[in-house]
Length: 634
Ligand SMILES: Nc1ncnc2c1ncn2[C@@H]1O[C@H](COP(=O)(O)OP(=O)(O)OP(=O)(O)O)[C@@H](O)[C@H]1O
Image 1 (cartoon, rainbow, N blue to C red):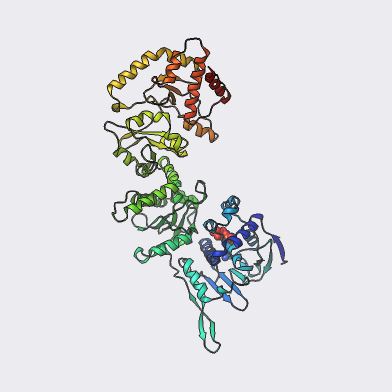
Image 2: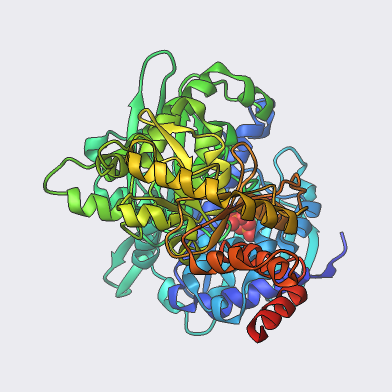
């Protein structure tokens, strides 16, 4: 077959540039990446061979071999996995297929591009070989194809690569690294072995290297024909908990996720009973760059009896726990389980429920740690978790009704008493005597929430109000109506009802004020026709003249704005304007004689100011400005 020269896809060139320039300080990871590809290739073969045992040919023992040649300055990583056909070599080694990777590349700006940690997060794969090699040759034959259908792919990792057909007896792939000048440190059994130990110990296949012996005549180590296994070759999760050290769990996490920040917490269990499986689940310390992408691949890999099955096993973890990383190894599922089957299987459902509960317990033990020695540290860790993943966890309130109560206990808020970390339980413990409901307000920012006029009476009376400023909060609250028997009530909805918190005198006073104010209210109502559904006197205001509230059952102004921003239509509902009859401005308004235009102007300004105060947008800002100016001159 003729030799062809082809060009890399633009993103590959970009990636190659990044890899060779940014990861230079951590060169050794090339071996981790290539060994991991070799191991993936073996997993793929094992998976395809479930339906077609002939693919094993005469070599059923899957393995990875690493060898080096000091004189030729080469390192070779060989596997007897699935291999590559010519088309696959062109496609897989010349383009980036994964859309996530492409997206990631396009998001990196110059500053971030130097952050090796960030790049490490998504795994640089095959191209990391170019950190240490100035040419890589790949020789491969796909399992199932004839010996004359091998392929040689070769490139200096700049703009082009070459492909040609070759004769190759062995199935699988050899990745041959021609080392760059100055990279000879890697031409050593000891060095290569220690890198394997560091990153690839848990690869469940044997990784073999040639034994060496000291030759005193030659005065150097010489390679023997005999090979030895240099990794532990036991899946970490299949070992007993007591045999695995904390450092090993953390190293495995890094290998699994490419995240060099140690995880916040992890849990390792063997579950027995109706469904038998092992779970090793981690909560990362930092949110990944694409946390908000609800469609991305899940972080939990599914194995069946230590055979890798798939890693976008959404069926194993609810979407709101998409930040969880780890491995689930089932003893019951059939090896050839398909995605469709996964969705329906009762065993999978049991695994999913069990794993969800595990993650929640893990979070609960941090949040409500009762261990005297570690409680402070646990709580700090929970606070860190909440900062990174709290908003995602809130999705669970609407999505996972079975665990809603447990999730509600894990929620943390800002309130009028503390800027963060307030749980419903903290709130309830601090409730005033006679207080029955939990008060909250939603707003775009903490400052807007804190300064909202609707809070004035609550501040005056020392009643705590939760301040909710997350985009998902409104949605979450449409699914959560109470906590521990206490109804959740928005202070921006309906007439203010302080129940037993308001004394009789105050109530009577308010009623009297409302009565005597009736004629003015009617005049304001007329002036605001088409804008305010109702105008009424309120006791919720202390320092502000007016505020807007939504009618019970209507959508709050905040939610209507969120929907509008998201491009969705919000049902048009007018707010209620509530007036503080004690306020000087309102008294001034009431004193304006009938028929004067000033009355209309001031009514409109009152309404617009109330809208601005809650973060709303004026439909006609110019008219507002004109009115203010007219009033200033009056
Ligand atoms: N040893 C190998 N045997 C067979 N195919 C391979 C081998 N190494 C790489 N490939 C193919 O080349 C593709 C690209 O490899 P690369 O390492 O760049 O990305 P990846 O493995 O898909 O992603 P990542 O390394 O981030 O998990 C692989 O998906 C696989 O199809």
